Image 1 (tube, rainbow, N blue to C red):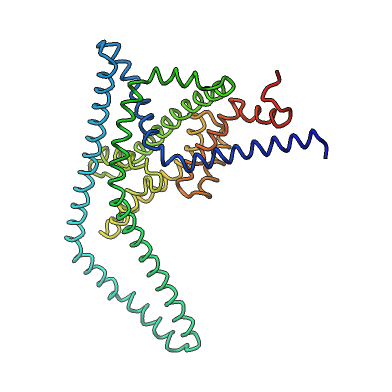
Image 2: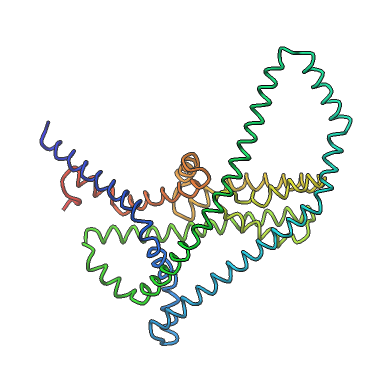
Length: 374
Protein backbone atom coordinates (compact mmCIF):
# COMPACT_ATOMS: atom_id res chain seq x y z
CA UNK A 1 0.00 0.00 0.00
CA UNK A 2 1.19 3.51 -0.80
CA UNK A 3 2.75 5.14 2.29
CA UNK A 4 0.82 8.41 1.80
CA UNK A 5 -2.50 6.56 1.56
CA UNK A 6 -1.59 4.50 4.61
CA UNK A 7 -0.92 7.66 6.64
CA UNK A 8 -4.18 9.18 5.46
CA UNK A 9 -6.09 6.07 6.53
CA UNK A 10 -4.40 6.13 9.92
CA UNK A 11 -5.21 9.80 10.41
CA UNK A 12 -8.81 9.15 9.33
CA UNK A 13 -9.03 6.29 11.84
CA UNK A 14 -7.55 8.55 14.51
CA UNK A 15 -10.17 11.24 13.80
CA UNK A 16 -12.96 8.63 13.87
CA UNK A 17 -11.74 7.28 17.22
CA UNK A 18 -11.65 10.79 18.67
CA UNK A 19 -15.17 11.45 17.38
CA UNK A 20 -16.44 8.20 18.93
CA UNK A 21 -14.67 9.04 22.19
CA UNK A 22 -16.28 12.50 22.20
CA UNK A 23 -19.75 11.00 21.59
CA UNK A 24 -19.20 8.38 24.31
CA UNK A 25 -17.94 11.02 26.75
CA UNK A 26 -20.93 13.22 25.95
CA UNK A 27 -23.31 10.30 26.51
CA UNK A 28 -21.79 9.06 29.78
CA UNK A 29 -20.58 12.32 31.32
CA UNK A 30 -23.63 14.46 30.60
CA UNK A 31 -25.71 12.92 33.46
CA UNK A 32 -22.82 13.56 35.87
CA UNK A 33 -22.32 17.22 34.93
CA UNK A 34 -25.99 17.98 34.16
CA UNK A 35 -26.54 20.12 37.32
CA UNK A 36 -23.51 22.25 36.43
CA UNK A 37 -24.66 22.59 32.82
CA UNK A 38 -28.04 23.79 34.08
CA UNK A 39 -26.23 26.11 36.47
CA UNK A 40 -24.15 27.55 33.62
CA UNK A 41 -27.29 28.00 31.51
CA UNK A 42 -29.05 29.87 34.33
CA UNK A 43 -25.97 32.03 34.86
CA UNK A 44 -25.77 32.75 31.13
CA UNK A 45 -29.44 33.76 31.02
CA UNK A 46 -29.11 35.98 34.11
CA UNK A 47 -25.80 37.54 33.08
CA UNK A 48 -27.36 40.54 31.22
CA UNK A 49 -29.56 41.30 34.25
CA UNK A 50 -26.57 41.03 36.59
CA UNK A 51 -24.55 43.46 34.45
CA UNK A 52 -27.54 45.82 34.29
CA UNK A 53 -27.97 45.84 38.08
CA UNK A 54 -24.25 46.38 38.58
CA UNK A 55 -24.18 49.27 36.15
CA UNK A 56 -27.40 50.99 37.31
CA UNK A 57 -27.17 50.50 41.07
CA UNK A 58 -23.37 50.17 41.41
CA UNK A 59 -24.05 47.15 43.62
CA UNK A 60 -21.33 44.58 44.24
CA UNK A 61 -21.30 41.56 41.99
CA UNK A 62 -22.48 39.14 44.68
CA UNK A 63 -25.51 41.28 45.49
CA UNK A 64 -26.49 41.68 41.83
CA UNK A 65 -26.18 37.91 41.35
CA UNK A 66 -28.24 37.21 44.47
CA UNK A 67 -31.03 39.59 43.46
CA UNK A 68 -31.11 38.21 39.91
CA UNK A 69 -31.20 34.63 41.15
CA UNK A 70 -33.99 35.42 43.63
CA UNK A 71 -36.01 37.09 40.86
CA UNK A 72 -35.47 34.04 38.64
CA UNK A 73 -36.55 31.70 41.45
CA UNK A 74 -39.59 33.81 42.31
CA UNK A 75 -40.82 33.99 38.72
CA UNK A 76 -40.15 30.28 38.09
CA UNK A 77 -41.84 29.11 41.29
CA UNK A 78 -44.77 31.47 40.66
CA UNK A 79 -45.32 30.19 37.13
CA UNK A 80 -45.00 26.54 38.21
CA UNK A 81 -47.42 27.11 41.12
CA UNK A 82 -49.98 28.79 38.87
CA UNK A 83 -49.65 26.03 36.27
CA UNK A 84 -49.96 23.18 38.79
CA UNK A 85 -52.88 24.88 40.57
CA UNK A 86 -54.74 25.39 37.32
CA UNK A 87 -54.08 21.81 36.22
CA UNK A 88 -55.39 20.44 39.54
CA UNK A 89 -58.48 22.66 39.37
CA UNK A 90 -59.15 21.69 35.76
CA UNK A 91 -58.77 17.99 36.59
CA UNK A 92 -61.21 18.36 39.49
CA UNK A 93 -63.69 20.21 37.26
CA UNK A 94 -63.32 17.58 34.55
CA UNK A 95 -63.81 14.77 37.06
CA UNK A 96 -66.95 16.44 38.43
CA UNK A 97 -68.24 16.99 34.89
CA UNK A 98 -67.66 13.35 33.95
CA UNK A 99 -69.41 12.13 37.10
CA UNK A 100 -72.38 14.45 36.54
CA UNK A 101 -72.73 13.30 32.92
CA UNK A 102 -72.02 9.59 33.48
CA UNK A 103 -75.68 8.65 33.86
CA UNK A 104 -76.60 10.69 30.79
CA UNK A 105 -73.89 9.00 28.71
CA UNK A 106 -74.99 5.57 29.96
CA UNK A 107 -78.58 6.30 28.98
CA UNK A 108 -77.51 7.62 25.56
CA UNK A 109 -75.36 4.54 24.93
CA UNK A 110 -78.16 2.19 25.98
CA UNK A 111 -80.62 4.01 23.72
CA UNK A 112 -78.10 3.81 20.86
CA UNK A 113 -77.63 0.05 21.31
CA UNK A 114 -81.40 -0.54 21.61
CA UNK A 115 -82.22 1.54 18.54
CA UNK A 116 -83.95 -0.22 15.65
CA UNK A 117 -80.98 0.24 13.32
CA UNK A 118 -78.45 -1.31 15.72
CA UNK A 119 -80.81 -4.12 16.75
CA UNK A 120 -81.47 -4.90 13.09
CA UNK A 121 -77.73 -4.95 12.42
CA UNK A 122 -77.12 -7.27 15.40
CA UNK A 123 -79.89 -9.58 14.20
CA UNK A 124 -78.38 -9.77 10.70
CA UNK A 125 -74.92 -10.50 12.11
CA UNK A 126 -76.33 -13.24 14.39
CA UNK A 127 -78.26 -14.79 11.53
CA UNK A 128 -75.23 -14.74 9.24
CA UNK A 129 -73.13 -16.32 12.02
CA UNK A 130 -75.65 -19.15 12.62
CA UNK A 131 -76.22 -19.85 8.93
CA UNK A 132 -72.51 -20.05 8.05
CA UNK A 133 -70.80 -22.49 10.42
CA UNK A 134 -67.77 -22.70 8.10
CA UNK A 135 -66.90 -19.10 9.00
CA UNK A 136 -67.51 -19.39 12.73
CA UNK A 137 -63.95 -20.42 13.57
CA UNK A 138 -62.54 -17.53 11.54
CA UNK A 139 -64.95 -15.04 13.14
CA UNK A 140 -64.21 -16.35 16.66
CA UNK A 141 -60.49 -16.21 15.99
CA UNK A 142 -60.70 -12.63 14.73
CA UNK A 143 -62.86 -11.58 17.67
CA UNK A 144 -60.42 -13.18 20.12
CA UNK A 145 -57.49 -11.53 18.34
CA UNK A 146 -59.20 -8.14 18.39
CA UNK A 147 -60.10 -8.54 22.05
CA UNK A 148 -56.54 -9.54 22.92
CA UNK A 149 -55.18 -6.55 20.98
CA UNK A 150 -57.50 -4.14 22.78
CA UNK A 151 -56.71 -5.72 26.15
CA UNK A 152 -52.97 -5.57 25.51
CA UNK A 153 -53.21 -1.93 24.42
CA UNK A 154 -55.19 -0.95 27.53
CA UNK A 155 -52.78 -2.92 29.73
CA UNK A 156 -49.73 -1.24 28.15
CA UNK A 157 -51.35 2.18 28.43
CA UNK A 158 -52.15 1.66 32.13
CA UNK A 159 -48.68 0.27 32.79
CA UNK A 160 -47.10 3.20 30.98
CA UNK A 161 -49.02 5.73 33.07
CA UNK A 162 -48.40 3.91 36.36
CA UNK A 163 -44.70 3.35 35.65
CA UNK A 164 -44.18 6.98 34.69
CA UNK A 165 -45.99 8.20 37.79
CA UNK A 166 -43.88 5.89 39.97
CA UNK A 167 -40.72 6.97 38.14
CA UNK A 168 -41.62 10.63 38.66
CA UNK A 169 -42.29 10.03 42.34
CA UNK A 170 -39.01 8.15 42.77
CA UNK A 171 -37.15 10.90 40.87
CA UNK A 172 -38.39 13.75 43.07
CA UNK A 173 -35.52 13.51 45.63
CA UNK A 174 -32.94 13.38 42.83
CA UNK A 175 -34.65 16.29 41.04
CA UNK A 176 -34.54 18.32 44.25
CA UNK A 177 -30.82 17.57 44.66
CA UNK A 178 -30.09 18.50 41.04
CA UNK A 179 -32.07 21.73 41.44
CA UNK A 180 -30.17 22.77 44.59
CA UNK A 181 -26.78 21.94 43.05
CA UNK A 182 -27.72 23.77 39.82
CA UNK A 183 -28.74 26.90 41.74
CA UNK A 184 -25.52 26.87 43.80
CA UNK A 185 -23.51 26.33 40.61
CA UNK A 186 -25.40 29.19 38.93
CA UNK A 187 -24.52 31.54 41.79
CA UNK A 188 -20.84 30.58 41.81
CA UNK A 189 -20.50 30.66 38.02
CA UNK A 190 -22.28 33.99 37.70
CA UNK A 191 -20.25 35.49 40.55
CA UNK A 192 -16.94 34.46 38.90
CA UNK A 193 -18.17 34.87 35.31
CA UNK A 194 -15.43 37.22 34.09
CA UNK A 195 -12.59 35.36 35.81
CA UNK A 196 -13.81 31.99 34.53
CA UNK A 197 -13.99 33.38 30.98
CA UNK A 198 -10.41 34.62 31.22
CA UNK A 199 -9.21 31.28 32.59
CA UNK A 200 -11.04 29.39 29.88
CA UNK A 201 -9.43 31.62 27.25
CA UNK A 202 -5.99 30.96 28.73
CA UNK A 203 -6.47 27.19 28.83
CA UNK A 204 -7.96 26.83 25.35
CA UNK A 205 -5.43 26.49 22.49
CA UNK A 206 -5.74 29.04 19.68
CA UNK A 207 -6.55 26.47 16.98
CA UNK A 208 -9.46 25.25 19.13
CA UNK A 209 -10.66 28.65 20.39
CA UNK A 210 -11.38 30.11 16.93
CA UNK A 211 -13.74 27.36 15.64
CA UNK A 212 -15.37 27.04 19.07
CA UNK A 213 -16.04 30.79 19.09
CA UNK A 214 -17.56 30.64 15.61
CA UNK A 215 -19.64 27.60 16.54
CA UNK A 216 -20.91 29.33 19.66
CA UNK A 217 -21.88 32.49 17.76
CA UNK A 218 -23.78 30.46 15.15
CA UNK A 219 -25.47 28.35 17.82
CA UNK A 220 -26.61 31.48 19.65
CA UNK A 221 -28.14 32.83 16.44
CA UNK A 222 -29.76 29.48 15.72
CA UNK A 223 -31.07 29.13 19.29
CA UNK A 224 -32.70 32.56 19.34
CA UNK A 225 -33.90 31.98 15.77
CA UNK A 226 -35.52 28.70 16.80
CA UNK A 227 -37.21 30.39 19.77
CA UNK A 228 -38.45 33.16 17.49
CA UNK A 229 -39.75 30.58 15.01
CA UNK A 230 -41.65 28.76 17.76
CA UNK A 231 -43.11 32.07 18.95
CA UNK A 232 -44.28 32.86 15.41
CA UNK A 233 -45.82 29.39 15.02
CA UNK A 234 -47.58 29.64 18.38
CA UNK A 235 -48.93 33.06 17.43
CA UNK A 236 -50.23 31.72 14.12
CA UNK A 237 -51.90 28.78 15.87
CA UNK A 238 -53.50 31.07 18.46
CA UNK A 239 -54.71 33.43 15.71
CA UNK A 240 -56.31 30.58 13.72
CA UNK A 241 -57.98 29.18 16.86
CA UNK A 242 -59.30 32.58 17.98
CA UNK A 243 -60.74 33.39 14.53
CA UNK A 244 -62.26 29.91 14.25
CA UNK A 245 -63.82 30.04 17.72
CA UNK A 246 -65.22 33.51 17.05
CA UNK A 247 -66.83 32.20 13.85
CA UNK A 248 -68.26 29.26 15.83
CA UNK A 249 -69.46 31.73 18.47
CA UNK A 250 -67.65 29.99 21.33
CA UNK A 251 -67.48 31.90 24.61
CA UNK A 252 -64.06 33.09 25.84
CA UNK A 253 -62.65 32.55 22.34
CA UNK A 254 -59.61 34.78 22.91
CA UNK A 255 -58.64 33.16 26.23
CA UNK A 256 -59.12 29.64 24.88
CA UNK A 257 -57.19 30.51 21.71
CA UNK A 258 -54.24 31.85 23.70
CA UNK A 259 -54.21 28.75 25.93
CA UNK A 260 -54.32 26.38 22.95
CA UNK A 261 -51.52 28.38 21.33
CA UNK A 262 -49.45 27.85 24.47
CA UNK A 263 -50.29 24.12 24.49
CA UNK A 264 -48.88 24.03 20.94
CA UNK A 265 -45.43 24.04 22.58
CA UNK A 266 -45.90 20.39 23.61
CA UNK A 267 -43.55 18.34 21.37
CA UNK A 268 -45.59 15.14 21.41
CA UNK A 269 -49.20 16.30 21.36
CA UNK A 270 -49.27 19.99 20.41
CA UNK A 271 -52.65 21.50 19.59
CA UNK A 272 -54.26 18.05 19.52
CA UNK A 273 -53.81 17.77 23.30
CA UNK A 274 -56.58 20.35 23.69
CA UNK A 275 -58.53 20.08 20.43
CA UNK A 276 -59.05 16.30 20.15
CA UNK A 277 -60.60 15.76 23.62
CA UNK A 278 -62.78 18.83 23.04
CA UNK A 279 -64.00 17.46 19.69
CA UNK A 280 -64.75 14.04 21.20
CA UNK A 281 -66.61 15.65 24.09
CA UNK A 282 -68.72 17.71 21.67
CA UNK A 283 -69.80 14.60 19.75
CA UNK A 284 -70.56 12.76 22.99
CA UNK A 285 -72.75 15.69 24.03
CA UNK A 286 -74.52 15.57 20.63
CA UNK A 287 -73.20 19.05 19.83
CA UNK A 288 -72.47 18.13 16.22
CA UNK A 289 -72.29 21.74 15.00
CA UNK A 290 -69.42 22.60 17.34
CA UNK A 291 -67.77 19.18 16.94
CA UNK A 292 -67.70 19.41 13.14
CA UNK A 293 -66.58 23.04 13.30
CA UNK A 294 -63.72 22.21 15.68
CA UNK A 295 -62.72 19.24 13.49
CA UNK A 296 -62.49 21.50 10.44
CA UNK A 297 -60.56 24.11 12.45
CA UNK A 298 -58.14 21.45 13.74
CA UNK A 299 -57.57 20.18 10.20
CA UNK A 300 -56.84 23.72 8.97
CA UNK A 301 -54.33 24.22 11.80
CA UNK A 302 -52.55 20.93 11.01
CA UNK A 303 -52.28 21.76 7.30
CA UNK A 304 -51.11 25.32 8.02
CA UNK A 305 -48.46 24.05 10.44
CA UNK A 306 -47.16 21.50 7.94
CA UNK A 307 -46.89 24.17 5.24
CA UNK A 308 -45.54 27.05 7.31
CA UNK A 309 -43.29 25.32 9.86
CA UNK A 310 -40.40 24.36 7.50
CA UNK A 311 -40.41 27.81 5.89
CA UNK A 312 -40.52 29.72 9.20
CA UNK A 313 -37.84 27.53 10.75
CA UNK A 314 -35.64 27.95 7.70
CA UNK A 315 -36.05 31.75 7.68
CA UNK A 316 -35.51 32.20 11.43
CA UNK A 317 -32.60 29.79 11.82
CA UNK A 318 -30.92 30.62 8.54
CA UNK A 319 -31.38 27.22 6.92
CA UNK A 320 -32.90 26.44 3.56
CA UNK A 321 -36.46 25.12 3.54
CA UNK A 322 -35.73 21.79 1.79
CA UNK A 323 -32.92 20.62 4.16
CA UNK A 324 -35.05 21.70 7.11
CA UNK A 325 -38.01 19.68 5.81
CA UNK A 326 -35.74 16.65 5.22
CA UNK A 327 -34.27 16.97 8.74
CA UNK A 328 -37.74 17.14 10.27
CA UNK A 329 -38.93 14.10 8.28
CA UNK A 330 -35.85 12.01 9.09
CA UNK A 331 -36.07 13.03 12.75
CA UNK A 332 -39.76 12.07 12.81
CA UNK A 333 -39.00 8.63 11.33
CA UNK A 334 -36.06 7.94 13.67
CA UNK A 335 -37.23 9.46 16.97
CA UNK A 336 -40.97 9.96 16.62
CA UNK A 337 -42.54 13.34 17.30
CA UNK A 338 -39.51 14.40 19.35
CA UNK A 339 -37.52 14.06 16.13
CA UNK A 340 -39.28 17.17 14.83
CA UNK A 341 -36.99 19.01 17.27
CA UNK A 342 -33.97 16.69 17.13
CA UNK A 343 -33.81 16.81 13.31
CA UNK A 344 -33.53 20.61 12.91
CA UNK A 345 -31.18 20.89 15.93
CA UNK A 346 -28.87 18.25 14.41
CA UNK A 347 -28.97 20.09 11.09
CA UNK A 348 -28.11 23.33 12.91
CA UNK A 349 -25.10 21.67 14.55
CA UNK A 350 -23.84 20.19 11.28
CA UNK A 351 -24.32 23.48 9.44
CA UNK A 352 -22.55 25.35 12.23
CA UNK A 353 -19.58 22.97 12.07
CA UNK A 354 -19.44 23.43 8.31
CA UNK A 355 -19.52 27.24 8.54
CA UNK A 356 -16.82 27.31 11.19
CA UNK A 357 -14.52 25.17 9.04
CA UNK A 358 -14.40 22.14 11.34
CA UNK A 359 -15.07 19.61 8.57
CA UNK A 360 -12.66 21.42 6.23
CA UNK A 361 -9.87 21.38 8.83
CA UNK A 362 -10.47 17.71 9.63
CA UNK A 363 -10.33 16.82 5.94
CA UNK A 364 -7.07 18.78 5.52
CA UNK A 365 -5.61 17.02 8.53
CA UNK A 366 -6.54 13.61 7.12
CA UNK A 367 -5.12 14.41 3.68
CA UNK A 368 -2.06 16.52 4.55
CA UNK A 369 -1.44 15.98 8.24
CA UNK A 370 -2.27 19.59 9.15
CA UNK A 371 -5.50 21.51 9.68
CA UNK A 372 -4.64 24.56 7.54
CA UNK A 373 -2.97 25.37 4.26
CA UNK A 374 -0.26 27.40 5.99
